Length: 211
Image: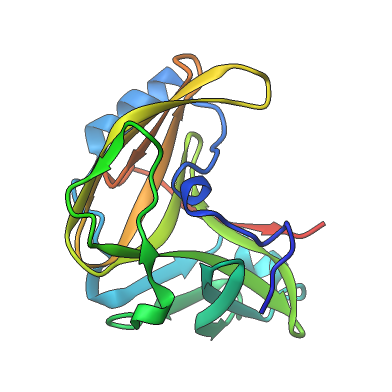
C-alpha cells in the first residue's frame, strides 16, 4: 500500500527522529540508568499506551509496518482494546523486506553486508489510518528495527535544521541480529542528537492521532 507524507519514512529520518527538549537533570538521571542491550527479548513487546483507554473509541487496530520504496507491508496486526497489547514479532524477516543500511558521510558500519528493516506502528479505525504510536520520553524517542546480522554503526555527521542551525548527529549503535530498539536522544543546548541502542531509564508509548 502507498503512504502519503504522513506515513512516508526514510531510514535516516527514522534513526534520527526528532525528540522534544532535554533537561540536564533528566539527562543525568537517564545516563545513570541506561542499559547496554537494545535487543527485544523473545521477539515480543508488551505495550501500554499512555492514557490508552481514552483512545478506545478512536482506534481499533494497531499494525507494525515495514517500508520499502514508499510501500508499506504489514508485519503484525493486533486489536487495540484498551491500549494494552502484545506485539509478537516474526522470528525473522524475508529478504524482500530488507534493505541496505544507508548512512550519511562520516558514519560507518562494521558490516556493510548486514541489511535492515525500518518499521513504524500505525493506529487504525475501521481500516483507515488514525494515528501513529511512538516510544518516547522528555528527550528521547525510540523506534523498532530489524537487522539480519550483528552490526555496529558509529561516527558523527553534521546537518542543518529548519532554523538554519548546525546539528551534530552522533551514532553509537550496537545492533544484534533480530529485533532491536534504536533511540534518538536530543541535547538541545549542545545542538546534538545521539542515535544509540542504549535504553533510556524511562520511556512511554504515546499515541499521536492524525489531524
